[in-house]
Image 1 (spheres, one colour):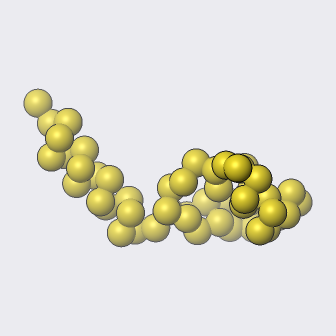
Image 2 (cartoon, rainbow, N blue to C red):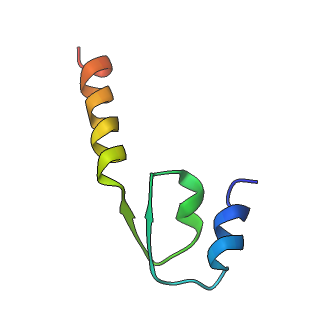
Length: 53
């Protein structure tokens, strides 16, 4: 599964912008990537809360 899903949706030759929730499989398609703001800030909050010494 993994990267085959984005390739199936957008095709191997898609070279536009991909907006995603940071799922690594999206990195295999598109020329540029934009991360979802809510997912990104949620990950930052978790990092601050659980990884801060």
